[in-house]
Image (cartoon, rainbow, N blue to C red; front, side, top):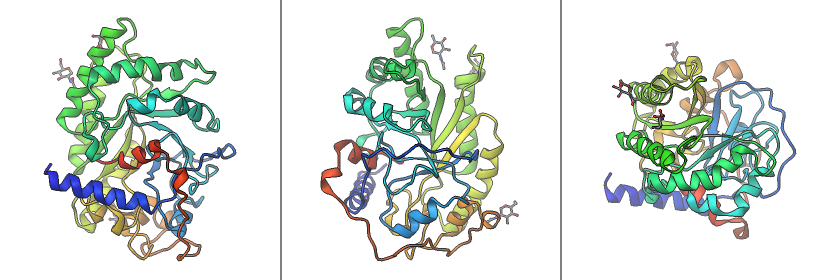
Length: 338
Ligand SMILES: *[C@@H]1O[C@H](CO)[C@@H](O)[C@H](O)[C@H]1NC(C)=O
Ligand SMILES: *[C@@H]1O[C@H](CO)[C@@H](O)[C@H](O)[C@H]1NC(C)=O
Ligand SMILES: *[C@@H]1O[C@H](CO)[C@@H](O)[C@H](O)[C@H]1NC(C)=O
């Protein structure tokens, strides 16, 4: 990855951040989602009220969302979509606010994602953590949330690496470090979080590798499920993107060992970062669903078509209260693709 690309990507993310109303600290009443769909939102924040109305409409094919942080987004009502918290890096894991925020979430939130792209650089949204440091922080700060030391037991994922060969190498070294620290338990996990940016065949192969690494090649009795929490075909034309998505969605829906997935991402083409390119966006710059957006929301069967806009005042931009921009939330906004 060229430096200039990384720089551009970071810049565009920063621009997006500055225009976004971030996470509300208020905890919304608990949700009882009827949805059983695997499909969710990788939500970087969207300043357009109508887009958010459409994304959270109850007839969509979506059932959950996350935003790379422990704090739900005020623009996404928790009655409609189950919120999945994420602990981005070691610094976040060490903060006492992190575990209190997580333990204060509605009881509809049951799963917790950890360390975002530890094998990736912070410039590209990764958390750049050595396998050794990650193992130590996981055992010290994450495992207690899993054990319910503070009263509530979370189902917890291992760190979500990039889909590059570094990812698997990192996971192997992480596992070794885990067993060096805790010879008996290592770093226990309940599910696996995977990222993929690329073509369909590569996705199928990466998921197969993870399944082999965690399930086929171990003596584990209950196979671990995989959540694909970042997924897109980067740098492609809209047609190629739609065709990749159209092949991918039914595949993931049917694949037993995949439990959840979320496409990157739920923004307008102009807000896409340079690295993924515009083709990944679910909305065009007028706030209409792209072909990919309509397909992702469930298409004709659920009442969504290309060009369709959400309701609400298009001119009403969400107000940004600077005091609400917690460092953690900022990290969360940077933490995304790779
Ligand atoms: C699983 O085990 C086989 C046989 O030992 C090995 O060749 C393969 O590389 C392993 N897969 C992974 C992902 O570690
Ligand atoms: C992690 O290492 C332990 C101990 O060496 C081993 O039993 C286990 O199979 C490894 N886990 C994975 C997922 O490779
Ligand atoms: C998706 O694939 C199906 C079956 O292969 C095809 O009938 C449908 O037209 C495709 N839809 C899009 C939006 O490409």
